[in-house]
View 1 (cartoon, rainbow, N blue to C red):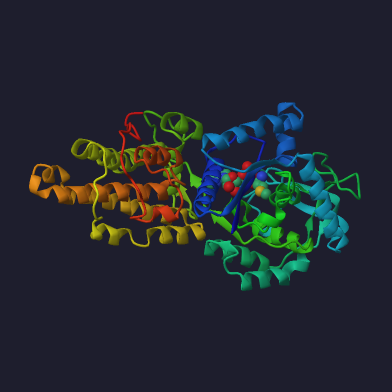
View 2 (cartoon, rainbow, N blue to C red; view 1 turned 90 degrees about the vertical axis):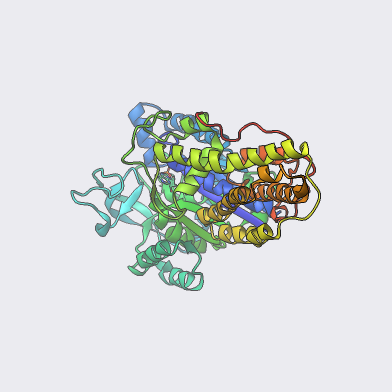
Length: 498
Ligand code: ME8
């Protein structure tokens, strides 16, 4: 089994922000989970460096586009490990190997008869690097996304015959209802297709910052075709071996809704034109909304990923984003709700569960796990949990999977209250009951921690080490599969007032 997950490649016209961190974190959770299943995983992220957005930003700063690209690509590259993201490669579209592959694939598209010369005239947003149809234009001829005035473009271009793929795309959507998810995005893409596809520019004449068109040196490829092909080209040079056989087609492209049309319409059409197999799924998450910020004591008034990580660690940010905003929907994030979840869920629920469990084992049993049975009631509450989590993650339902796990964290805390081990400890006749409770708690904690690892990798590893059970496989996440012998003390996982 292999699993290949991608993030969009981010524009280097500006520095990374929380939205970029969000998609990278989500892809990392999926990659880690599939590694837990023992699958062969490839996780790709990177930067989109050509086109007008980058050329214009560089021009405004009075520097060369390559210089701006180099500078900002480094910042995106540095963000991944800060987020504890385990990408297997970081692609830059200025990599010469990528550029060669773009030329090769798009030449094939032309040889297959899907490219012709024509004149483009229409409205264009240089920030989106996108040509807007009449019905997509806001009042005052503005871009609906960037709110800047659109420019009127007229140039001699090579066109991609997108219109030839009207029927094949409709068939694709009919045959593969899980090609795009969630359903609202599938419907949106399908209705765009049904509204009638027009051919689109494949090249730009006026721009020079791009991949040169091999059959006409006065053109560069339109940045979106160059960019989309990163998902494919990366596999050809990320390692010494050609990884396409192992990982193509991609399992999941994660994107936000801003770039739905490119991934759900242009991309499959382009691949069909080049006779390349289509990816399995495009999952479209929502926007993180950051309005109405209240000032927070420790974080100021912006949820800056770098500041959050510095104060609270990457795990806290990963957890917060995937817990607070249902993955696939828009949702507000704020420093105050971050601090609330950190304290009530990470520190009080998980942190306390861990420290209480380990402390009680230390106090009552000198850290040694007592032998005996597990509580069948809890075994029932945990039955089928790894399978349910895996089923959610197979559909990129990251928040639902996390919720399944978190319900068990809460269940274990209730179990402590119900059983009051401190009372049992006072009564020598109930020694066996206390053994069972402690054993059950330690095993339950271990099982949820293995499942939490993709979300909270650093804390989960620390906690599992303290439980003396570092096994991370999904099979080992079954309640009762653990082999804890002895636990050791642990510092608070999520210190308060940090
Ligand atoms: O579009 N909420 O790059 P980009 C959630 N280079 N996600 C967000 C977000 C927000 N507020 N803001 C950004 C491009 N994102 C192209 C992509 S792919 C072949 C080329 C995330 O730097 C989200 O994943 O504008 C979104 O799709 C992406 O960043 C856009 O990044």
